[in-house]
Amino acid sequence: MAKYIFVTGGVTSSLGKGIIAASLAKLLQARGLSVTIQKLDPYINVDPGTLNPYEHGECYVTEDGAETDLDLGHYERFLNSHTSQANNVTTGKIYQTVINKERAGDFLGKTVQVIPHITDEIKRRMLLLGKGGKFDIVITEIGGTVGDIESLPFVEAVRQLQWELPEDRVMVIHLTLVPYLKAAKELKTKPTQHSVKLLSENGVHPDVLVCRTEEPLGNDIKRKIALFCNVKQEAVIEAMDASTIYEVPMLMLREKLDLICLKKLNITEYSEPNLDKWKAYLDKLKYPKSKVTIGLIGKYIELQDAYKSILESFIHAGAMNEVKVQVINVHSEFITKENVEEKLEGLDGLLVAPGFGHRGIDGKIIAVQYARENGLPFFGICLGMQMAVIEYGRNILGLKDAHSTEMDANTTNPVINMMEEQKKIKMMGGTMRLGAYPCEITEGSLAHKIYSATTISERHRHRYEFNNDYLDQYKDNGMVMSGVNPDTGLVEIIELPNHPFFIGVQYHPELKSTVEAPAPLFVSFVGAAKEYNDKKGSMKSAALQDALI
Image 1 (cartoon, rainbow, N blue to C red):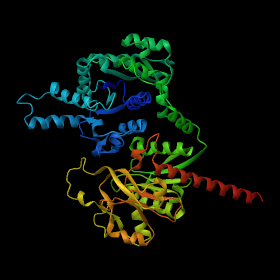
Image 2 (image 1 turned 135 degrees about the vertical axis):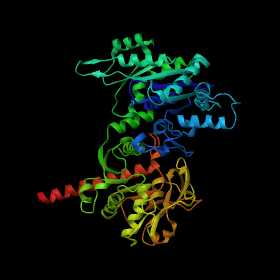
Image 3 (image 1 turned 120 degrees about the vertical axis):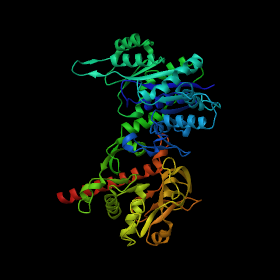
């Protein structure tokens, strides 16, 4: 039967519960156990699909089309396995399910209350992934911070499960902060003590404390925390700030977090951790041979988490190419034809990211034109591909008002149009084209070279698509539609064969990039940027030699 580990957080948010959960899962997986992770979010939205990225960061999409919390991206990147809609539960989903049952008469006239009805539904969701024998261990991250009003039903559900399940089937890890006061030159344990006290007042006692810190804890500090928080000293885990999130599993291995959990859960059959691939990846990541600079044009670039999967995909692809990828945020709202060269100067590649709405669109189109005309490696994702189509339509096909109906509903040349099945939809949440769909690739194309396959599957999140009424015009003028959905004819990939690297995709390849299987498009794009950088270096060297002569 599956065993359950719950990860809670205290003192402050953004301590890294998701990274700790993913790191522990990686270590347990490396020891031969089957593990999955789920995230319980306390907000009332049914899912983050309708949330502005500034509110909650990136909306991550799973294979089965669920719009989920960005932490699921970390889970997949660490474990190299897919999650599903069952891996992300919100307060909104819980209440929606309970209310629907009440309306159907399932509670037989009983008064519906937080306890037991809401907590029963939370427990059902917590245990759901553990049924069927697929997983040995299910790790559940509880969103928010202990003490938040909205998190109380989740904490209560954990309390009930600690009482209902055998001791060796459930455990709680509590992540806290041990701040270092520079003026006093001391680590302070009081916030951790208060956090554990608050958790205990809610009936949940942690088995392990993971303490985020900027300075080493030392045995004296660990002993003090253990004494005042009523845990064993070996169960006080030091979580020092790391140079990269991918170092955290190795730090947790050193602290023996996985062994402590295995002992508590009475799991005796496991192997030594096989982390050879992970260590090889870390070596390439930490010791790159060169550097490339990529310009990222997006709508939400002020918030790093808004494009989390893209940034992580660059890290994966950089390690594969043994280069450090420096990502420079470019504000498209301030790009004009007069300053575009100045704004994009020094870049080795340009990525136009996904987004919604008209803000900054003109600047994106100008940037795409510059990349196309100057041989700068270009990669467009979703909206980025659509910008490339619009730019080509205006400047090569002569369709001066070519546009997307998302930005201009009255354009006479809607080269990007809303998908037919989307036009009748009124509800916004969970109604886009979501999840994995197949794509057939033309042999001999750049996409075929990148994927080494004629059929692929990638994840989507969009309402607008290339308008096939203009398909022949684009083909006749040199643009290659190298990827097409076999069922709908939807154009998935566009490219320009007379350019060093110019490709746009309607899907989101960043959502499937992992440490062990980096996204092929990102690997090739970074490789093209490296070649571009090397060529620039050779030209500068030649120019310098000529000047000396």
